Length: 493
Image (tube, rainbow, N blue to C red; front, side):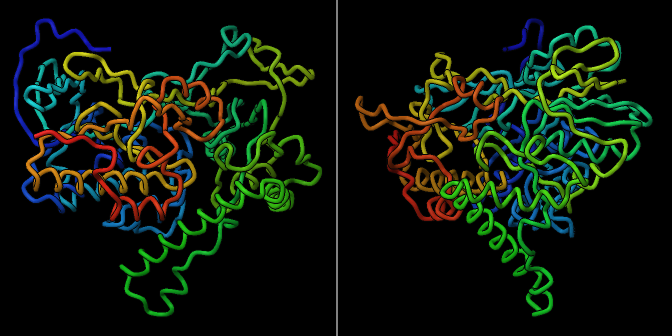
């Protein structure tokens, strides 16, 4: 919602491109623009008091990437550390180093919250309204780039847990982990079975008196040691230049992920059996795989949860760590009681139940004063919305590193801007081919609870031409580099 601006002072300025968000998407887009579009005037508006996006927001114990960092890192500043999966603080430091060393930092404005953006067809520009220290700033721009991610920064997924209001201990959502909370010698119950739980579990098990994952249904958990060998030792032995090693490692890992995605899609039964075969040897003796690690869905219908070198499974071997699978009957003042009668004592309950998906970072977006509803729009080339001029939003993949999708969007944007400059065009508007264009598909392909709930609020993909979803990393990169940036667009001068 737009905040009240009553009593605020007002300032104004003009740039070519406004980028919202100083996380992976915003930093990458800014770098690409600055290096490939000389003379571009841009600004990066970040509502928080530091850069990093996701890696500044989430600060729970053990927070880490859920994809490898060789493909998650930028091609123009390869991931410099040996860990293929790393914790949040290291990723945030990497992003700060990238922004600082490549001249992006000077364009970032912290504590600049974007309230609204309105496109005027008469003057063919965006007016972006920003709040900074109660000063209202209007910034005009030809292009607006939303690098604000896909979830609500302020509101986690609302889940009904019977009797939670009766609990006398601490209730924590990972998105808002208390800065000074000490879990040492505490009995911790983590409700949820996704990537957050899998990351939290080993960290809490180090010092907590007891840590129990309480899951309604299981997820697939896979160790990074099973994702395929890294090429780095071989390439180093062969004396490849370091820049080549990083590039080839990125290509190799992306290729492996593409193969895994295809195999799980076309051979789901065999994939389930293969993951079962990998998991059972890592479990403590007598641990029932089919109760705790046999999901009702096929692999990659929801995300695979990654644990570095099997740390999640190693924690299960500790006497203070366990998993309980089933339905919660109710929460009491000091415990969780399951429907099968199992009781989990708890000093704190962590509700790792998911995120609230939301595009656009709570910005009121309009065209000539008429508000844009995301759910009414069809996506062009994975990054624009039909009938909305000069608006680009950055979105990644569900089964590849986010950065691959972000870079494809940046390339598409730059090619489009260069074309428009050469032809004297002021705006590019995605237009559907006609009234018969009715076949659509969900934007987010996974069937996890949070994505199913959000699907009615998200834009949709079509099934043909530039309206198809981006789901194959290599093909999508080729399209972003050499594919058409005019098909499906209407240009104005």
